[in-house]
Image (cartoon, rainbow, N blue to C red; front, side, top):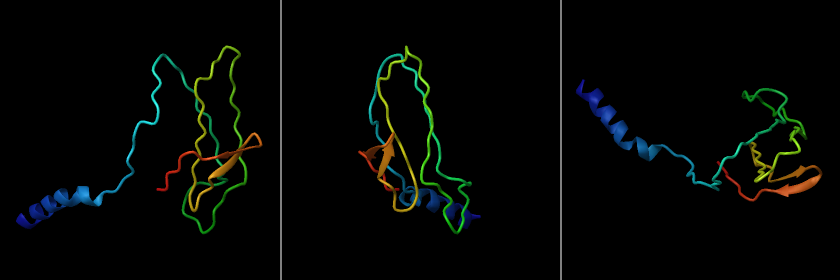
Length: 104
């Protein structure tokens, strides 16, 4: 029993040294009464289960519907992927290059 307790104590003591994660920080803060809308899509034509080949397309689209009284304060484009990454995309035929890159 003492060996089990000793092992658990060692695990809890050294566990913070083993766990790795990405540091996070506030990117931008906007104060006030705001609403927000997310839209999104995927280029995957199958689930993200482990396969021998990637099952992705070359384009994706989604429609954002706004009313005439809506006011856009900020708009952000986020995209993610696996492998080497694609750091330039086209939005409405306009090339967009990533301002910030997270490689984890």
